[in-house]
Image (tube, rainbow, N blue to C red; front, side, top):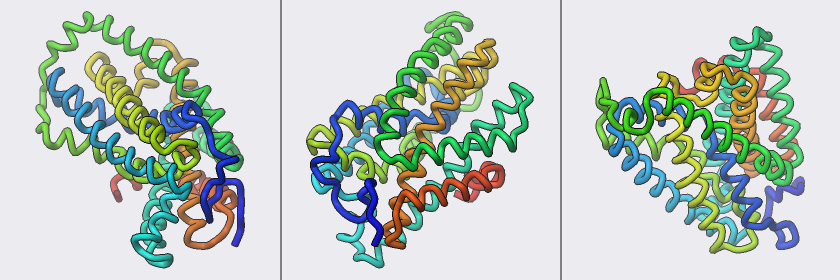
Length: 325
C-alpha cells in the first residue's frame, strides 16, 4: 500500500498539521469558483435585491453548518472523507462514495480547464487546444506537490480575486447608476425562492462533502469549524454577489467576462486563471484521495493520472458533463 505526504491511507500526524490562516486560504481557494458566479447571476436576475441576499445567506449558512461538522470530524481524526466513510459503509462499501466523489471531481477539473481556455482563446485569438494543454498541465503539476502547493497558490489567488473582482463589480454597479439602481431592478422572469435556495445549496454540496480532505490538516478541530464557515458562508456568498452584480449590470455573471467587457483584459485573464486554478487543484487533489481509497495507490500518482484524463477530455466534459449531472 503506497504512502505519500498526502496521507491518503491514514491520519495526518501532528507534525504535518497547518495553521488556521493557511487552511482558510485553501478553503477560500476552493469556494472562489466561476460556477458559483453563474448561479449567482441566475439568482440575481430572477430575484429581487432583498430576496437574493436572503437566499444566498440562508443557503450558504446551511452549507457552512454542514461543512463545519465535516471539518470538525476531519481535523479531530486527521482522516480523509473516504477513510471516514469506512466507518459507515465498511472498507469495500466506501468505494462507491469514493468513486462517485472522485469521478465527479475529475469531471469538474476538465470542465474548469475548458472554462479557462475557451474565453481566453476567444479574447486573445490563441489556439484553444493549446491553452487547454498548457493550463491542464500547470494545474496537474501544482497538485502533485500536495497541500503545501495548494496553500501557496491560494495565498496568491484569494486576495487577487477578491480585490480585482471587487473593483470590477464596483465599476459595473456605478456604471448602471449605483446601488439604488441595482436595488430597483425588477426580475423579468421571477425565480421561485425555494428553487433559488436549492440552487445555492446544490451548487457546492458535492465539493463541500470533501471538506475533511483539506481541513484534516488543521491543528485545532474547533478552529476547523471556523475555517469551513468562513469559506462557505463568506467566500461562496462573495462569488454569488459578484455573479449577481455582473448579470444585473452587464448581463454577464462571470466576473472575468465583465472585466473583459470593461477593457480589463489582463486582469480578467489573471482572475479567471487563478479562480479556476485554485478550485481545480482542490478537485484534483480530492479525486486522488478518493481513488487511493479504492486502489491503495499513491494519491499523488492518481491525481496526475486524473489530471491527464481531465485535460484530454476537457472539451467533451465542458459540453456534456454538467448536463449529465
